[in-house]
Amino acid sequence: MPSFWRRPFRSNEEPQAAEVEERGSSDSDPSELVVGDTYYIAGKAANNKDTSYQDASGAPVEESSPLGYDVGPMTILFLNVSKMIGTGIFSTPSTILAGTGSIGLSLIWWALGFLTSITAFAVYLEFTAYFPSRSGAEVVYLEQAFPRPRWLFSTAFAFQSVILSFSSANSYVLAQYLFKMTDYTPTDWQIKGVAIAGYTVALLVVILHNRFAYHLANAIGFVKIATLVFISITGFVVLGGHTRVENPTANFHNSFEGKATAYGITNGLYKIIFSYAGFENAFNVVNEVKNPVKHIRRQGYIAIWSVSILYILTVIAYYAAVPKQDIIKGKLTVANLFFVNVFGNSKQVKALNFLIAISAFGNLVAVLIGTSRIIRECGRQGVLPWTKFWVSTYPLGTALGPYLFKYGITLIMILAPPAGDAFNFVSDLRIYPGSFFDFLMSVGLLIVRRRRKALNLPRPAFKAWDVVIWFSILKNLYLLIMPWYPPAGGATGGDVSFWYATYVVASIGILLACVAYYWLWIHGIPYFRGYKIREEVITLDDGSKSHRLVKVPNSEVEEWDKTHDHAGRIIAEAAEVSDKTADNVLVVGKDSAVSSTK
Figure 1 (cartoon, rainbow, N blue to C red):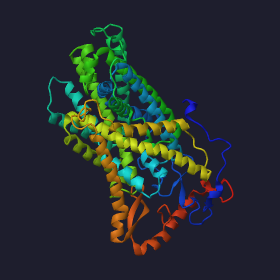
Figure 2 (cartoon, helix red, strand yellow; figure 1 turned 90 degrees about the vertical axis):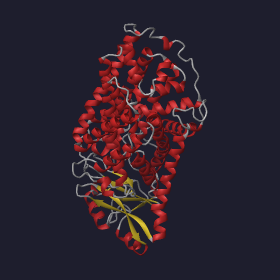
Figure 3 (cartoon, rainbow, N blue to C red; figure 1 turned 120 degrees about the vertical axis):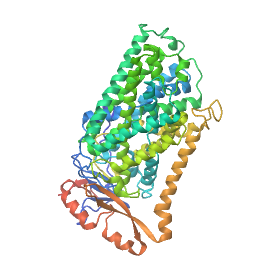
Figure 4 (cartoon, helix red, strand yellow; figure 1 turned 90 degrees about the horizontal axis):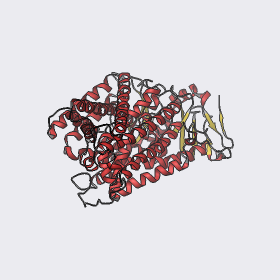
């Protein structure tokens, strides 16, 4: 992949070793480094040859992944592809065109999706280079970037991830395209019923066997690529005047004619980000990938480039076959309009709609895999109650607890909102808090760089350009500020039938609820009941390792702190682990650079 996405540390950067105290020579924990009042511990897993360092408050590294190592290069590629090509390209072009106002600007917006994705990908990849043996992506990155106040960001992100872990929007689209295969006009509740049935099948696939779920995602990913290639080629045939479509270039005359509003282009950008979401999916399974930085970098770039090109060609095909106003009125079924206009209302069109339904189903599988690892990692941090439920892979070696919870919350979100507005509201609701945490993550990467420089740790295998990080910061600031700007149609002139900023207020409410949950659980209730929260490392029967937050009475806190290290390990056990990894430990002296000890 292009080398300009990488940049090594400059050779003239001076280590700040004087700020670091040595604790590596301690008999009890020779793998621990101290900077001020912050403690870092070494960890190494079977998926990566190098030792990595993380803040001691982070969930312990699992030396051997209880979920296995079934994620190879092809699976990395199609995990990303299957999540990116889900329902967005078949359901959002209408909203994006309506928001941008013109054919030309909407195409620029689809190209902008490539830029936002590949820059965000670089941020994720640098974090992975620092923490190559931790799955869960943002869970880990926020935990390590903002370890103080202790457990705040871990708790907030865990709360948000669990509450917003539903996949109701894509389930709706799956149901709608299945009904498009028939001549039947369904009621709202019939759509809901089919959406639930489709999601239930996806759940069974991922619960029963990890490797089978990956292979199925790969196969469906290939079908997704083939579907977009077919639509793209058909678009060129339409433009050549060889189909039943009359005047196929009509939409491209005066292509920038139309009025864009501030609300419209912001809402369009939200839908673009929703459509490209998935480029980060492989980062959720990092600890199941051997040599993750190398393989995720290569396959991730291939996924982003190929999907971006196919997206733009597919949208051009839509514009060649469907009049502009019909696209805007088409809502979630633009692809069906394309098929009908090109092939007529025939059996072939019904078969093509089935391909889109398969694409939506593959997206459900890919999202289930990725978000289950996010939720499981939240559980491993100890900030969710019932740790074993979230972390254990018993009995089938799959993330059963996260899968079941995600299924339950998705059913609620399918049944609760009105079907007509559900897709737009839910897709927007997911992106606003996501933008907030993405903003923090981009800022946090700069913080992690500074801390690692103070430790004089080795340079990462990948380092993003500074301009990439700042672009990501500014993009997310825009996405946080502009949704407040009202649409031209007034309070109800957005893409839903109720107040246009409902999703913004709901998102902020969720974020505030995260903070309230943290304060009550970590500070408020312990203060009144006379105990302190401490973390301990536990190992489950399936080999899973996790933190668990425990209530230690105030009278026992001093003794607890004497017998446990800063990572929550019993000090004798920590010493045993350190002895096993001593050959790979990096130690920083007060007046020396990082050195290796044996």
